[in-house]
Image 1 (tube, rainbow, N blue to C red):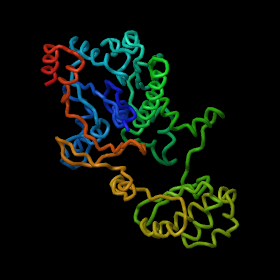
Image 2: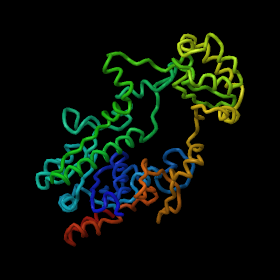
Image 3: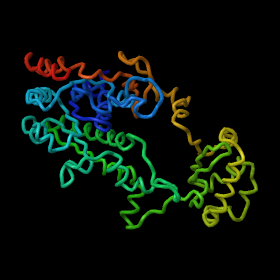
Image 4: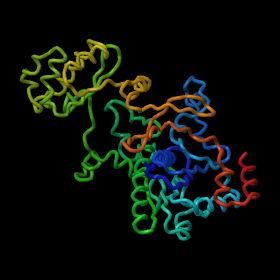
Length: 401
């Protein structure tokens, strides 16, 4: 069976995370993805472990390898008019363009959707922005830290009441945006197949933030009020809360239907009498006495290590999780068995593990184990396939070396 996107060609003009991650997913689905990259390589390519504070001599940037797997690399300096024209020749043979370049720069290079789609109405043009591809803020630079995290309310809402605003790890909003971009592209391609017309697909980090934070934002929009902050010392439901353990670790109880699980939890922690305690017998009572119950549970959990509690809580069908470190999570047996961490055999960097795509298909293998391209490795081949003349190819290759 052919790959879902076999025969689809994508040109990626982007850097950092969100759009390249979308390109990797399209490559996973069988599309040919040509990554356009500055001759010296984007910053993300050079973010090695040591530069990020990790004491390891792995010579490449593991996140770049993950988000650029399965692509071809076209190195060119778009300051050259010949490079701009050559890239347009490459785009002439493409079905999809994906980019996070600001609109004003796209216009400068003649790569804006209006120009490209005037010549080829069937082209699907997908763009990522901080605040929307049109409007007053279209040319404002942004990262997911700003538009997705800080401006969506997530940064303010995700921290304990006595702590500073929460800190987001790299790529969280970007990877969310990448999946939205792929969904839009797939829908646009289906419409193009039916009508012959392409379209512009817009994804903004700000909107992704509101969507990811949609449960709380829906309350705020409908009521005009701030949803309450979580307070672990006075949770609305003490069975939906995190607690420290004896060894300085944490466990997370997530029993939203608390009446169903309260007797089971009381038995698992060796305190079955608590299930009959009038202060805690029902969800309303537990809410009214939440500080008292949270303090009691914290005292109980502080008496044993996280590992010991794992064995005790496993004795009942409770919904809970240990709060793991990243290294612990990378060693999860179920994740490994399920193919969540495939192995890459890279011609330049050897064998290493990475993160698999977020979806699996029964009739199409998507392991995520393909290698990312060496910088500018495919420049001459891609340009020749697009019909660029030898002299221009030589110029562009020379300027990229």
